[in-house]
Each structure stands twice: as C-alpha cells, then as structure tokens.
Length: 345
Length: 104
Image 1 (tube, helix red, strand yellow):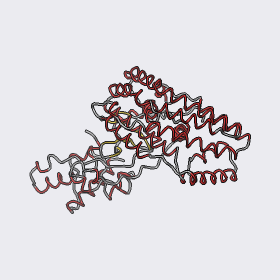
Image 2: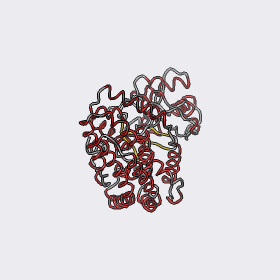
Image 3: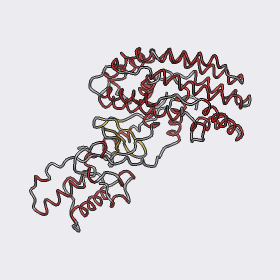
C-alpha cells in the first residue's frame, strides 16, 4: 500500500469530517499508513479497507469489547514448502501425544528465532526439557510401535494398547513437576518479546492439536486435511474403503461419546500465557497439572481408536505401508533448538 | 515512530487540518490520543507454530500472506506499511518455516 492510497484515505476522512471540498495533508500524514475509509477500501488490502471503527480512531485504546471485529486475513500466498510445513505440524500432533502442554513448550522452542548469544542457554534448557519429557516420549513410542505391529498383523491388541496408554498417562502426569525448574530458567533466559512468541507458539500448537485430533461425530465427516483424508491420500484408499471407514468412525462416535474437555486445556494455557508474559514467573504456582495426562491420554486414545477402525478395512499392502509410516513416527526424534535456524529438523 | 500507531489517524488528521484553517488554538490538536491499530484475524496456527518471528518494537512479528502480524492486549494486528527494519530483514533473511516431520 503506497502513499497515494494513504492520501486518498486522508482526503476522504477530511471530507467526511468537515464537509470541505479539498484540504492538504497534515504533518502527521507523511509517515502514516492508509486510513480505513471508503476511499481506501477499493484498493487497500482487505484488513485496512474495512476495519477501524470510527469511534476508536481518536479516543485511545478501546476496551476489548469496543475493538472492531477482527478482519479476515489476506489470501495466502503460500509456497509448496509452506504447505508442507503446515501439513507436517498437523501430522506431528496427530501421532505424538506425550507430555501435553510440556510438549507444546518443547516444540515451540524450535522456532523461536533466538539470538546467537542465547543459543547456549536455550539449548541447555531444551536439553533439560528433553530429558524430563523422555519417559513420556518413550511411552508414546511404545504405543505407536504397538499400533504399527497391530496394523501390520491385521489386528491391534487392545490390551497392549490400553496398557501403553496407561503408561503414557502416568508419565505425562509427572511432566509438569519435573519441568518446573526448566520453565523458570526459560522465563529468565528470554526477553519480553520472546516470551510473547513462546506463548503465541504454545497456543498455536494447542490449536493445531485440536484440529489434528478432532473428536466426536464431526471427526468422521469429510475435512480438508482430515485424518481419514490424509490416510486415503497416503494409502490410495478406494472410495469403498473410505466410506466403510467413515461409517465405522460414525458408529464409534455414536457409541462412545467424548469426555474430552478442551476448555480445561485452554484455561490452563491462558493462565500459563499470562504468567509467562509477566515480568516475574514461578512455574510452581501454575495449577491444573492434570491437564497434561488428560491431553496426552485422550489424544493417544483417539489415535489408537482410529487405527483400530481402519486396520480391518485395509489390504495387506496398505497395512504394510501404514505400519512403516507409524514406525517412522515412533522413531522420530525432535530436533535441538539450534537447527531451527535453517528451517530444518 | 511506530507506523502502525499512526494508522487510521483520520480524525486526528482532520482536527489538525481544521484547526489550522479555522484558527483554532494549536494545542487543541497538539496531543491527539494515538489511535488503536486495527484488529485482524490472526495468522493460521500452522504459520505461527512453524515460522521464526522477527522481534521488532518489543514484540514478535510473523510474516504471512504479504504482511507482518503482531499482537498486543487487544488482539492481532498487521503493519499496513512494512517497516524498513522488517523489510530489510525479510530481504536478507526470509523467515524460515520449520519442518516437524522427516518422512513427508
């Protein structure tokens, strides 16, 4: 958006405000971006063209309730690499359910854009977190391995799956207490802006996790990049196979209603976010440690139930391919912080 | 000065101009309250989770869809005019996207 648009917008504003035919621009004008006005709306980007409630323009920061409704994001101009990166993070959250919020923090550290001067301190904290999360990660791997073996064999051992989920639940329940010191060190090592970024990222991972592990009857319905749609793409499922799996997913959703409580996780993350962005932070004061096992075990159950439903419908070749895919997830190692600089794990 | 804080200063600009024209005291418009930045829809979570932010004016900024996004207590915003610092940063070191999986 250029200065011409801005000048048009200002002119429109002046016309609106005082009814005059023509005015020059004020001194403040030269450095200002385009105003939100009818004149600007024809050529400005979507957000600028329609936002900013007039009442808010000269009255200082409005109360949250007075802020204009969020405007839509612009059309995405993503590349194939961008789309792959987005698909991969969804795929990651579909298959890794250890440590709950602690996992979100660990993942977020990989894309913080920290300075070279901070690398040593952050990598040390990340290594500590990695160690603290290791028991939960091992339980996660064991579960995926059991699912892979079951898929390959054509029948998933429910008893083994339940035991593995129980172990995942137990180990995830210890994560918060184990990671308290690391979280405090992390807070001390980051700048105010970096703390904001960490909170942004943790909340983003939570949103992605919810999308990736959608629950209830709606999860059985067609979605772009949905779990079944991705599986269909990866295994070249026939339309008959897709419909059969979908019918079984619907039946399972009707038979076993959800007991997941995402609002608990959201509340926990809001509390964490507010506390972590504050000048002082004490991770011990964060409540609701039960959120981690709740999140981890529920996600793991969703994943296991999906593969239990899918497996009988697959051909032997498809089962072999899916089992290999799951084993790759089981062997996936999260990268240390420093590698994020190059945008690769 | 923060470009976004100048955003949509329609009324302030009008008051300044009007004041000069009709002879109103200059101090009437001397200290206009800074307008709030527009609130926009946040970038997709997949973007925030996988892109490195650039730190500018005390907050992280995320490049998405041709704009730099940032947030404050009121919500998410974007810079209507790309600040020179961010433009230079993008030109020299485009924000990388992180890949969480090896096998895809």
